[in-house]
Length: 419
Image (cartoon, rainbow, N blue to C red; front, side, top):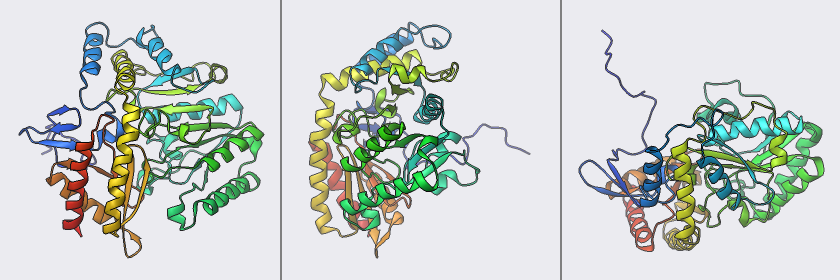
C-alpha cells in the first residue's frame, strides 16, 4: 500500500545536517540549543543577520495591518515607500522598479523587458553565470550542467560568451580580458548580429559559478559595445549586491553603470522579495501586462525590505562588509601560503571563495569534506563552482572580527583533518 503520510520530496537535498530551530544574528541554533556560526546567510539572504530586531518589528507591525495587498489589484503603501528608498541607492537614471518574489522571477522580467524595449530577440550571457531555475532564467544559466540536465530544450535566443576568469584559463588578467572581448566581437559576426541583440546580462561578481569578479576594463568594454549598438546592459546583482561586495552595488567597484539591475537575496533579510530596476523611460517600453504576479511585492516583505535598508544605513553595514571582508581575505591568504591545495582565494567584500584543487584538478570531494568537518565544529558554509570545488564564505554583513577569526580557525582545523 502507498504511504499517504506527507513527506518532503526526495529531490530536496540539504547541504548540512542541521535543523534550524532559531536564529540570532550570525548564529543558527538547533533544537538541542547548539549554536552554529552561519556563514551561509541562507545563500546570501540574511544580510542583517537572523531576526534583526528592527526587521522583526517592521514585519510584525505590517502583519497586524495588511498581509496581502495584491499589487496589480490595490496599492500596497509599502511598495512606493520601498521604491523611493531604493531610488536613493540605485544609479541615475534607474528610478523605476518592478517587484517580484525571487531572483529567478526578476530574470524572467528582465528577459521580457529587454526584448520588448528593443524589439530584438537575442540575449548574450556569460559562461559561468547563474540567473535562476525557471525556464527562461535557466536558459541564461551556465554555472553547472546539473541545473539544466533533463529539462532541455532551453529557451532560444541565448548566446553564451566567455567570462574573464583568468584563473580558469591560466592566463594573466590582461590577456584573458583581451580574449573575452575579441570573442564577444566574434559573436556579433558569427552568431548574433548587433541589430538582433537585445541585451548583455552579466553578474559583476559571479556567484554559483565560483565567486569570480569581473574587471573594470571588461565591463567598460561591454558598456562601449552596448552604447555603440543600442544594446541594453543588465547587471545581475542578486547575490553580489546590497552591500555584499563591500560597496552597495558590486558594479560600483568597476565604474560602469548598467541599464537595468536585478536585485533580490539581501533585500529583505530573509523575506521573499526581489526587484528589477531600470529607468522610467525603459520600463515604459515594456508591453502592458508584462509585469505582475500574485505575490510580487508582498506587503510584509516590502516592510522588511524597508527596515533592512534602514539597518544597513544606520549600522554602516556596507562599510563593515568592506572592513571585515579585508580581514577575512588577509586571513585566508595567510592560510593559502601553508596549504597548497587552496589553489585560489577570490571574491570581494564578504563574498569570498576558496578553490580547492589536487593534482592540478578541481577537488569538489575535498571541499565537501571540509564543510562537514566545519559543521562538526560549529561552522556552516556552502560550496559552489562547476565541480563544487569552491568553499564559499557568505557571513551576514553584521559579522565581527572575532567571529571571522573563529571561523578561519575552524576552517584551518577542517583543512588539516580532511586532507
